Image (cartoon, rainbow over the protein chains, first blue to last red):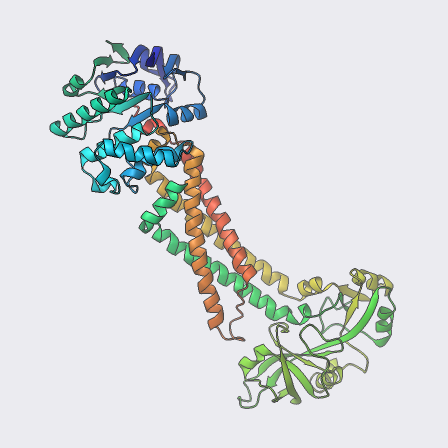
Length: 224
Length: 366
């Protein structure tokens, strides 16, 4: 079963002057449950729109989207919120950790926003921190962590809800080459180890080698 | 909500400015309320102390002791009304009192009452030439056993005890026998001299709605009030209350604006963070509840600091100087109003929170 299946998806933005901008045009994409797909393309090509649709942040204008067996095409806004709490993980471009929470609490935020699992969540957070090599940094605030450590915390946060799909938005854009490669190796090993599908949005060709497949997007059109 | 409260604890510096401003506003609110209560208290104590169901004035008095005359015949009619159990005469004269040991022009303002039925906290009628003084008059140097001289005729009255909260029109109450009051009135206000048995008002103990029955029975020759209505009918009380309440209302409005501006600013600063939280699955209601929790917590802390300061101020100000009366009910009311202002202030940020797009966390323009 695919972790992500998008078929014939269109996303059209209606502008204030009545004109329309097609951000995604009849895009079809399937990602297997343990597959890592690099989504590459120039700025404004629609890769973040595709990522947002796959993550239940944006709804489609046309087409169908199924994530982890759940058809989210017709989901209402509250249903999409519940979907995001349970089915997907995000790692944002600028990491975006909560600045006044330490590493462990940044992982537990996911539990506080959704249905509370409390002690189970605390155990999972500790386990993830250990697996990501951050046990000794658990009490540190983001400002006390290095770029790579912050990225690892962000990955841990994305994995907290045991997602079917993790979406990485330019995960290495703020890192130097060596650190970027380390982070991509970490992403690959973590995803493969957990059998979790991932879509990595990037316009850096150097990191596509860490992915199983590269999909190019230009002007809203996907090309395998 | 826990996230918001944790921010409050971990980053208190962000909330210092709002806390200081809100503390000052809360103190102003409680001070104004205390002044209002103190002024009203100093104007109405003598009537509030009446343990009765009605105060009866003559029909043209407009609730003024000075304009009111109750003749013995009219009093007998009142006593005969069904539901009336006991009637006592009440008379007033407001004078300056010379206090031994103070300068001849350094007069204490007193309201001398002649009474038949003892109000709450006032002992039974004292002997001729004796009186109980309100304790606010201690600030004017009046002491137990002292003889003060009332009015231009310097009528002597010996103070044989102290009572509390019996002031009238801002003047300390002095409670004497009707004969003493009548003598002092005759000596100092010859134009207002009253004959034996004539009082300015009657205090009536009886059934709950006896005031209406009295006016009906006297064919409108009396103007009767319940104690609460008589208090409100004292000239100036309603106007003062309305004026202060308007100032308090404006102060609350300022509190709403301060909270609204501060948390609107904080919301704008956090739009990126809110976008991330929404992308992770936070509902707008959760984020807004956190904002409200922060506003309520900051306001509650400010209000509690202000309440402590107001109580300390009240204790520090000597009785009889500034008419400040900080009561528990006033403090609680002020805190509740401020907390409502906090919620109302946050409401201005609700639309902005609702409009935060989770897509902003990962950008929609690429």
